[in-house]
Length: 196
Image 1 (cartoon, rainbow, N blue to C red):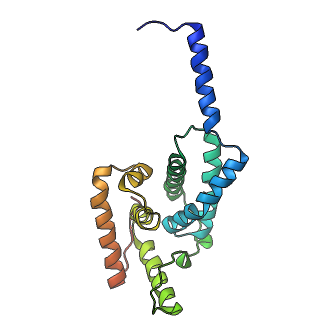
Image 2 (cartoon, one colour):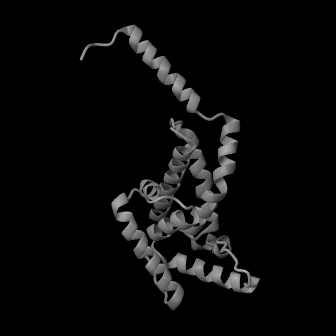
Image 3 (tube, rainbow, N blue to C red):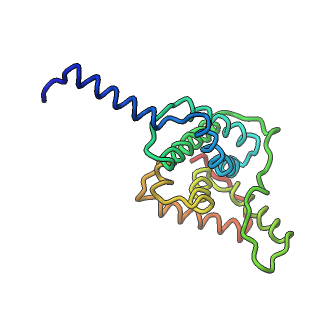
């Protein structure tokens, strides 16, 4: 391998910095990105933590850390996955710290099921509350997987990358999480999950 000349090094630096500038976000681009992602990210955080106030705090911290990274992204999807990865890491960090339960509020009204033609509002509300309670009883990892798969519609590869799991094992992990959720919904038996 030959040594690079100073001219080649300068050219490479110029190309690299030009690419980085092209992928950086200005204020308008960030506002657009925020508008496209904040609602779904907030819903994800509320569902995974089960705490609306904590979800708001983590949402703010996620965007703050996202802006501080100044990382280069290949696409808007790559940027979105990176954002969810930061949020997931913050959720894991928050579980390690003790938190007062006085701020804990349920997120029961935050899952919106698709209403059928003959459903009335009280039935939908009852199902939403049952689903929210069952989700709270799942392990945090199971809540994250289910939310990303079914509320966000992410692929197995996207979920595995965001949660730091192996793609090959995600299908079986997701299947088990669905079974646990179904059991909780049918039986209503209280179960508490670990912090996996």
